[in-house]
Length: 113
Image (cartoon, rainbow, N blue to C red):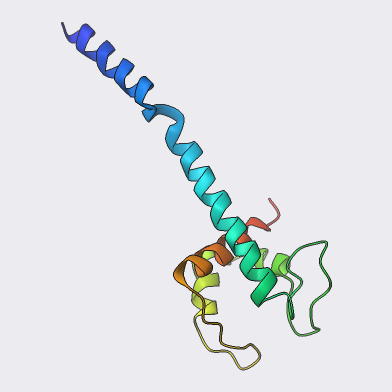
């Protein structure tokens, strides 16, 4: 009886997509966040920063996004905190939560593995 119940639960989980669906959904969410971050970078950041390896070089004082991503201690959270804090050399950006999340995800996607 227990074997039949276990097999039934396994079948239900497989049919409903419990196994394997979560990583795909999470990857799709990450892809969407990165894409939003890229669009945000193009409109709000590219005037001063080099936002990708193929883009135009940024202003002399503005680090590239790749350089930011490769700071050893940099995390997605630290990018978002930085963007919400005033800095003399950078304009205060008024970004939505989704744009902040996306920009953090995009910048960290540029980290060399």
